Length: 124
Image 1 (cartoon, helix red, strand yellow):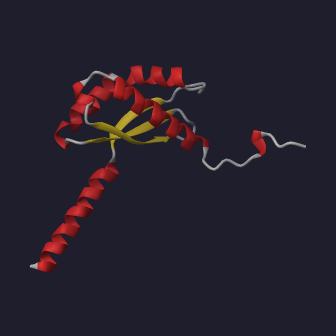
Image 2 (cartoon, one colour):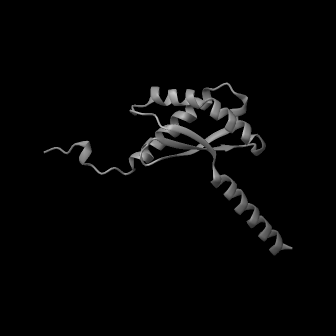
Image 3 (cartoon, helix red, strand yellow):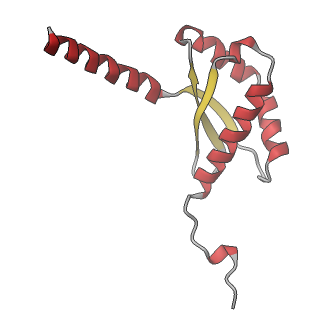
């Protein structure tokens, strides 16, 4: 008897798969948008809630000074991005999109700064 897809264990949870799909779609749509506030924005990840009704889209902005403007632009384009997700996916209900700066970028920069300071102190 052949096993159906439902009987195979999934490597990723449903929310992780949806998050990856959303990341790809939103990143693709951002590349097409003609908004200068979004030129240096990258989608670094998406976390979806357990019930799949909310998706937090984490973004990285190359110029940290322009981060608030980039977040404003993303909020303004939220409905267009949600429509793109609806067109490009087979999800029944598109989750609400919430945009936040990726905290891992700032944490990585902080660790890098600490390591440089330690290296300067050891060498001096």
